[in-house]
Amino acid sequence: MRHVRIVSLVCLLSCTLWAIAAGQTNPGEWTAPPQKAVSDSASTMQSNAGAPPTDTILEYAPPPQQYARSKAYSLAHYRHFFINWLYGFLVLLVLLRWRVAPAYRNLAERASSRRFVQFIIFVPLIFLTISILGLPSDIWNHSLERAFGLSVQQWVPWLADWITNQLVMVIVGIVLIAILYAVIRRSPRRWWFYFWLASIPVLLIVFFLQPLVVDPLFFTFKPLSGAQPVLVSEMQKVMHRGGIEIPQARMFVMNASSKMTGLNAYVSGFGASKRVVVWDNAIAKATVPETLFLFGHEMGHYVLLHIPKGIGIIAAMLLFLLYLGYRLSHGMLARWGQQWGIRDLTDWASFPMLFLLIGLLAFLAIPAFNAISRHFEHEADRYGMEVIHGIVPNENQVATHYFEKSGEMNLSDPDPNWFTKAWFFNHPTRPERVHFVATYDPWGKGEQPVYVK
Image (cartoon, rainbow, N blue to C red; front, side):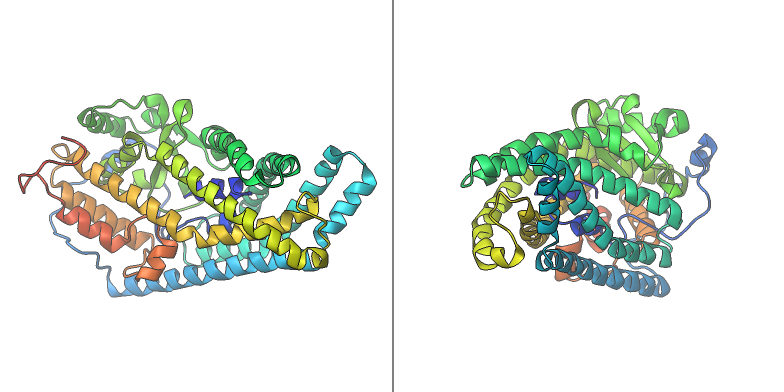
């Protein structure tokens, strides 16, 4: 969910600030209607131990009332997505048409003849302007989540998080923009390649620091072993079956219930910062077997090296987008540069144009990003099924009941078409996931499992 935000930053902040808002949240993959307060005690986990499911589910089929509510939310979410992107592009076009960036550039040049000082003046001003103009879009999105009971966060703490997020964006943006204009000045014809080379270390640093520095700005993380020793003990059986050891020091529980109400877990970071995080909502609302499947899925990301693979794929796509941006930027300058008050590509005032251009290209690349992510998520589902086999009784129905339960709680689209799947789903659709886990049984067919032999 958060990786598209980071990609957006690196691809010239790699997209637009509205890619960050739209950033790959699938309807129903994150959130759920409000439930009772979550407890971190071991007794909560024990009470959720649950018996193996007795009823059989083969396809995703929420009750009629739930179906209607899920469709209403999904359609509203889809509408918000495209309107927000359009609004973001229109904001940048307005900034260009009204020559806001040239005005900031002139102000910076009057203040100092040194480019470094000009940069320190210009970048925060342009970022602040874009952020403030984008605020109505963010408010609209949060209103939707609250209206459907998918967020429990009040407006004051939400605004505090919004400000914090903008500050993080500015910090990373300052670094990237400094690199961008330095390489444009040094190599006007190959800046796209040199910026790509320089952005890779920035991308890696951001991925490494995100779980250590950025995530704790928004949530509280506690060692899972201290909060849920019973669950950790069961997880160790799953890890032993998978033939790996994830140190307990890298397993955390996150207080997602303070803001969201969905069921989730994730893997983030790499190297010394890699960790497995389980949401407290999942601990409270899922049974132990269901949580073990969820953990097995996230363990699949860990074992199958999806994070480094994803970084490599993102880097390759980033290079392609930057090259297209380079080829198209000269035509835009020739056609509208004088009208927008942009002297040349090295001019600070060209930033909104580049932001708009790369943002549009990144927007068109969203289906490709989603397709790659869906492949990784399907692999993780398969791994999760295989790694709990022999540990969790009736694992097919355990996984099916988890997806059915979380799908209904999260208002997942019960029957997305191919278009919505391409644009909005970085996980397989809920019907696809339910069908797969309900029918996946290589052992019963005398076949070899793919990952866990």
